[in-house]
Length: 108
View 1: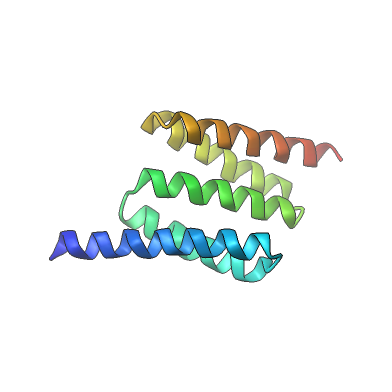
View 2: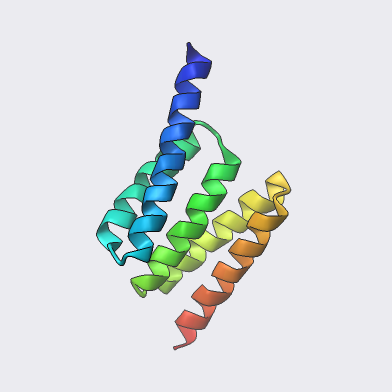
């Protein structure tokens, strides 16, 4: 029963990630932020590094769209730590890109 509940939470987290990405692409930033927050909570509670990493990347992009460069940097750095710990090379690349974007934004 616990495994099924954890699997359901991970699926809900994945749905939140997809919903956040769609909302971000359609410029529905408030809705995207709600989906990211829900997804991050689920990813952390289920200890799903892959999901957490992708949500942190999405969070960084969302925060950058809001011009919240310092918070975007923090999300990217957290994602880098998760990627390095989990050995996710794709996630590492995505978070490095997000970090670069957030640092460029802070210099503007």
